Length: 52
Image 1 (tube, rainbow, N blue to C red):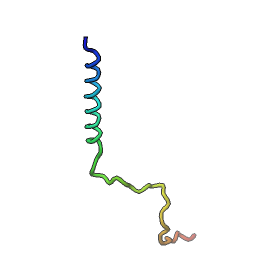
Image 2: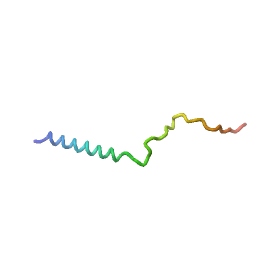
Image 3: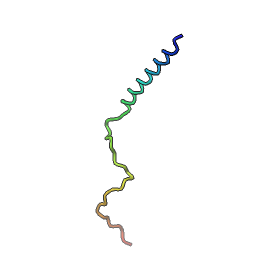
Image 4: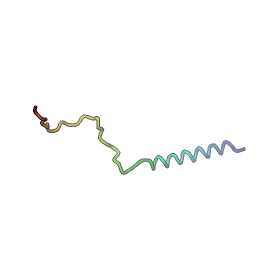
């Protein structure tokens, strides 16, 4: 029985399909770097609040 070549063939195909799917999975329509919503931002003009 040729069990070892069968296992190596299945593993090779699985790795090949995984690489192809990982390339397809990356969506190029979105920018790679997005601003962090938790990062501190530069201070802007002060907006006055309501005075009671």
